[in-house]
Image 1 (cartoon, rainbow, N blue to C red):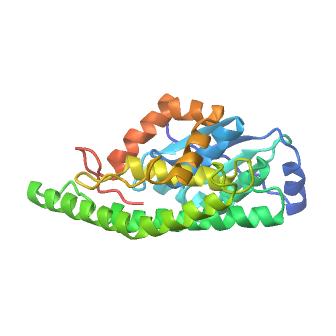
Image 2: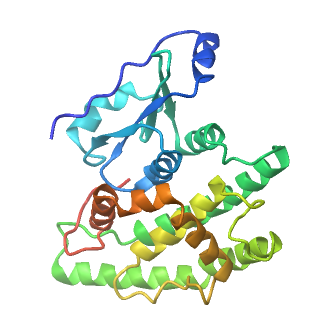
Length: 277
């Protein structure tokens, strides 16, 4: 695999760059590591929109190539999105939430008006809080290491499963109760967070459910998310999965590879890793 190369960003006034963004025939490059992680929602948005895009892949956060390129990024972190405008200008976007909002506006799934946009953004914020809680309470706690003995690794797996069960019973239950009620209020569980159209909130909720199912620790209880237990959230997930562009992305070899690499990265397979986000 050739070394990843970051694009050369256009240096120009805000007025000129803003003019470049008024055109719609853009292509994109997404720089991130070789697993789902924080770039997952951005990949979903690009796939949803059907725009031309490709990846600039760094192996992992301790990768020598990433360390070499890190100073070139706006906030010294990934993901970074590069947009090549129709004019040829190369624009650079950093930090997940701003990138999500920018693309959601570009692809018209950010809400039809200011009130709808607020509804979308507050749902996304709540979803993100739940995802961050799982990340720190479950995934990062008792992270397996290559230097662990067999016995210590087993202890960590057991404690991680206990943390997951605690999360299911408390943090996730609270999230489910709130979001099931909110979704029921929107047309009796129509499969959408806001109105009758797909928005960023629907994509983010679907990704949260998919990740909790993918990254269930060994020995933990079944994730309490299903058509029977959480019908309104499940309807959102089904609606998103049925979008042709999303379905095609999920069925792609690259998506399946990212699933496998994500499980490996977080120590959910026989192989372990010492790399952390």
